Image (cartoon, rainbow, N blue to C red; front, side, top):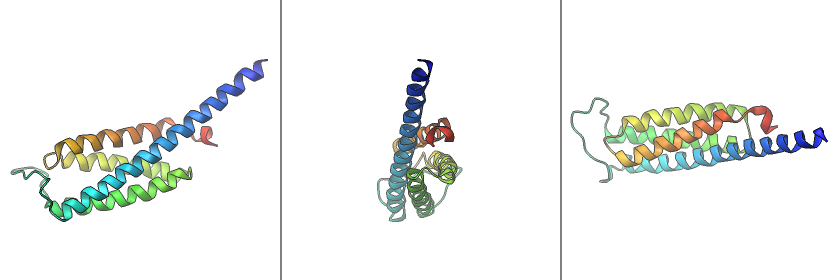
Length: 138
């Protein structure tokens, strides 16, 4: 009877881990896709960005656009690897989400509300990737 109680718990843990891994992959894919769009808008110098003066981390809007475009494309590629449950993709996913948090923090004055949303989404990606254990996915 004890074996029946441990088996469903193990299956539930595996299901939860798989759900968190898929959640992280989907969120990183969406964050990357939205960052690609943000990069294209910044490269095109769209009027939705706020012009700030005397900002310490001031870059040209086109420069920020290229940074967001590259990080977004890398995030989408890593998310595709995460769908296949690759360990390298999980490690790179945490690193890219951290870089996205930093770049969105640095661009807060240009696009404040969206930067906060992207920081929160990237934080959820890091949380989901760091709480899932590899042995639960196998």
